[in-house]
Length: 291
Image 1 (cartoon, rainbow, N blue to C red):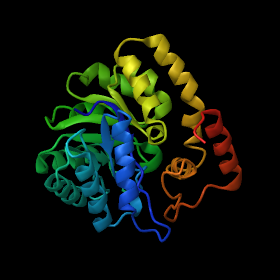
Image 2 (cartoon, rainbow, N blue to C red):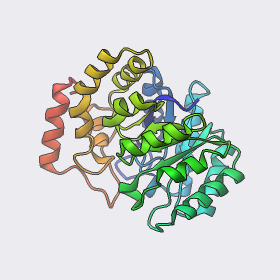
Image 3 (tube, helix red, strand yellow):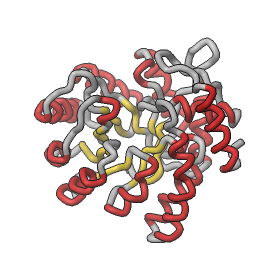
Image 4 (cartoon, rainbow, N blue to C red):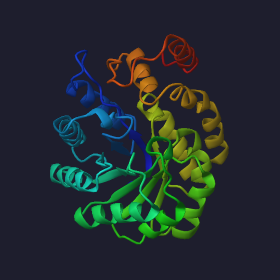
């Protein structure tokens, strides 16, 4: 269920900073029309860190309603508080989410045993498929392969979004627990290498603006058309890199604004793309025919 080309969808805001539900629903529809396999609201790219509880519920509910069962919805419900993550996950289940994405606890910097107990507690409390999310650049700590392999023994922990940038670590998980847990790439530019090692898909930032292209590459890999997949991978490298010229989701949200799909409004402490970065983004987007 949680495989293929998946989008870590942005949360569009109105000029006053409130959530723009209409634009969000349009973005969800754009993804489904483009062949995206799974929608992932309220992740890092969805600015979950600055959404309050009511807004989080609004976004998840709107996503589930708009999708209307056509593809799975995996709601971001992670927190650096285990109790809070349980509460948010239970609420997502009540709203009809098909699964949950759980970022590793940030700021606290738990031990590997602490990480294991955190995820075990959520898994025991919430009867939904669960995707672990390892992103050391955001959380300040790495969940090592050994911990993920331990967690793979828990039935409803079904996947891990690996955004460590470490192909060796992801490969170790696949080698030792690939029959129990799916590895998903958390970095667009590593989708091909990780899927070549046995990963099952990508939770993508770039898919916000190029969903058909991301889906086409994943499809080529799954069909064993490696020359086609390699060509697509290399062709998209510049746009993947452009999505991270400043902190995500500032570049991708700006890109969607340039495409006329939503406002570029971002919430502090993030700020608008700086002028030099904006010019660089525009230049790259023009080469892809996006603007």
